[in-house]
Amino acid sequence: SFPRLEMVDIHTAPGYEEALDLIQIRAFAGAPNLKEIRLREMENSHILLGRMDLPIEQLTALQIDVSSAQEVQYFDILSRCAKLTSLDMCMSCIYWDAIISDGTQIALPSLQSLSLSCHPNSSLVRCITAPLVTDLRMTFRGNQDIRIHARDLVQFQHRSSTTLTSLT
Image (cartoon, rainbow, N blue to C red; front, side, top):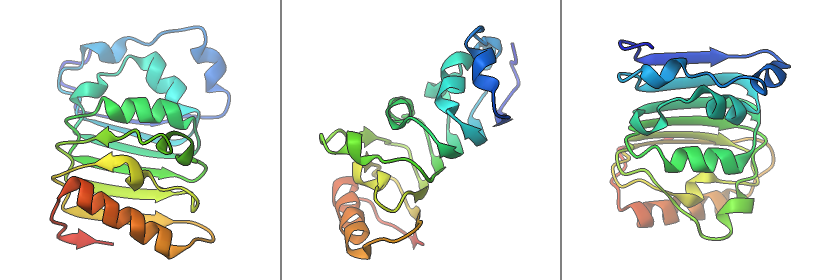
């Protein structure tokens, strides 16, 4: 139990998944003040999130920087983060289109700052609705058609009815 813990910054090494198959980490279940999680340099970090019993629903800040992942698990995690005010996702190998195509949306009603760095053929902003976002940063790697991303941005703006003060 960590009653005063406010932030967790997690880095892992290759092969940690095998150890997690054997355990369920409940240490963070008793962390009522945990507001921020950072996951970095990890493959399959959704496994870690599932095993750690983290209080995802109470988070106000989430930073995920991974090279490969299962988009469905992150979609489920983000859907539970209604209190997020800051989201920073750098996921170079995620193809969100597989779950975005069915029209499913992620509502982030408290989000104010959104930073996305994604695979060039996919755009997470396509499925997010966030009416309080004022700061939006988008980075796409590789070859891309800027018109597609511009269309996604316009649709995000229309869905969210937000007034951006910063767009990068």
